Image (cartoon, rainbow, N blue to C red):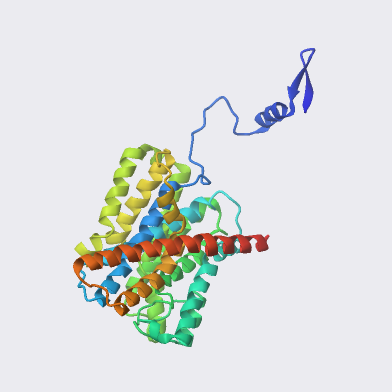
Length: 392
């Protein structure tokens, strides 16, 4: 379809697309030839490097939980507490993504919370229900779980609660303790969305710094009972600072060229240093605060990956990208797979020699990846699509 433009006594024929392009160029406030604008990365760009970090972080957690299964098979495993540092990378990424996807958009607190609930709740409730059903129908297959109604209700509602067996602040699906932190962060972040953009990060700094400071001031709790004291310590943990660190990184991403200045070489170097330090610093320096032993390496890892994303130097490979995309499924499903594989291995009296345990480890992790991919394709993605469609 064509239109006709009259200019300087001449009538010429141009396409509708070209005509509209001229109109939009004329009225757009960003099309000023007097001063060139800075090219900043788009928050909507797919961050492939960050997805790779998600996958690596989830695999670290899988390896961390592989350790007790190896011990069940009679193999003494050395230090490995630092592998749980994968969750610290998740916290930094969460703060980063929440910031860059909302800071320059009008997002209401309810809309934000609804979006996060749709993303987090369905698969988590499914895995929790599987665990509860196993407690009722076949409790003997569970190695560390016991039916406790208050604990179960708290698990479904993302409230930190002591595990009836371990005593730690863990829900029925024990990796879900990090989701209790995530939900607490989402609640705070949703309130921050009511604050003007220019003040939001400052208020966030005050809130997320105050929480661990208050926790340090009342190290022995508030004196209102063991449960409330444990919950108080949980929610005032220094872990909350890692969400804010991610938000700061998101501000650098949105407002500066700092990540471009780092570039791909230094970005890759930062990421590799973070990836090496994250699993070992907690074991090497067990007495220093986790914000330094885990939070700093996690920040290096995420910053390096993000810098590579910004300059477009991260190649797309289907396997690590799939692991990153399925990282939430991997995080929630791997305890089931590891426990089932370990029990089956013992029941069949398979070898517990060192080579045999290497076979067990590789097989277990491989099965975790397969189950996570199937969960991502067949359960997680369809459920998210279903609830988002209903939300409209």
